[in-house]
Length: 213
Image 1: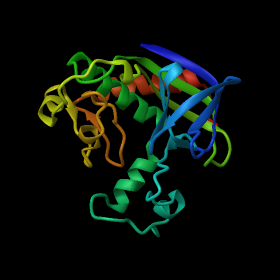
Image 2: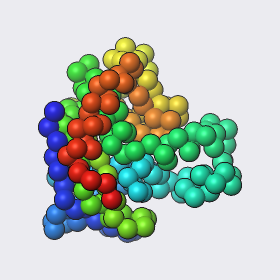
Image 3: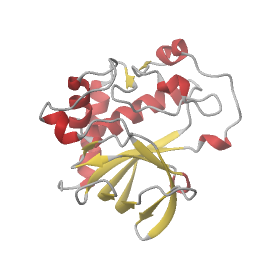
Image 4: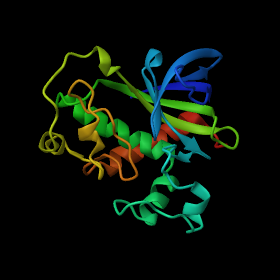
């Protein structure tokens, strides 16, 4: 598996009419920012939001990390529990990147998702919402905006590819040109029976990143 190493990435706060920018190893790139990850089209890199090396959500309605861990967070709606949010925020970005890679590869091989060519490691990640530099991880994946349109992928097709649909079903709602793109959520898309493969990739990513922040 290919692993692309980025020494430093500074994610700037999105601006009205301008979107967001990421400074990657000294170069400025446009970034498309989502709730759990951001995508840099020129690098084909989808990088997870991270705080202290663990997954993070920047959605306006996401509960604050400190309140999740001290059990004082007020959770909106009934879809997710406090425990769901705690598990999501406690999951290492390396682990989630490995899960994403396996799921994305299975979807690609079944014609349901974009080509995924490897993973990406960010040794020093500085997000605008963070408390200093940390590490982050992600996957290397094609920009779907250049793909031909296809019939939208169904839940049955996704499950037949060996992938569990996320609880909010955003992987179905937020497809791009008929392909599955959105893998991350509080309870996100998961590959079925893939623990050994995920653990191996997770170890490779952690090794490529070096000592933790």
